[in-house]
Length: 230
Image (cartoon, rainbow, N blue to C red; front, side, top):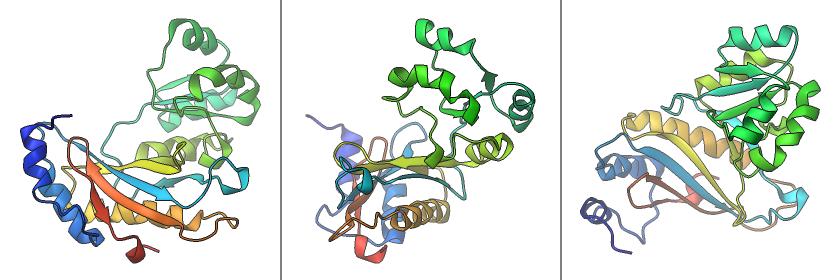
């Protein structure tokens, strides 16, 4: 596939064979962000686990100290007094049973994160086939199935992100925007990596961090030395 002129220019700045320290990688990210919009900076972490086994799943959530740079729309499934709590916490959409047909039949998905109280999971479970593949299904490990809606919504709005393995045992996560300072990006990246390292399954054998790289939306990947992270 032919790469664009800006990508080719950015790629010249990166040594594909090198493993960079975090500070060097973040500095390069700023230099390779050449798009005419504020690109998202993403981390890609390949782990030495087999996600097909339940005891080797790596999944959780972490609050990035400097946020993601994105306005996150939160949907909360709740009832009774919990509706008022979610609304007061800043949730963009709050509802219950009545939202099921809207999502199932109308394809409404104008939200980025879905939170539910435990007593609503019977209702939300009916949306599994729609929300599951999109990574929107509430999950206790990610803190999105909870009775503490105030804390959950505020953390998400402040920059809480969920990390999970894909089928290739790679985690893809945003760590900020190209407009962030190098320090902000480095802090966010280090916070994410610390959470993933802490989440290492006891059954994982051998090298845990197989490869780590960061890139902007339109830019080349920059490899980070995993030995400096563990």
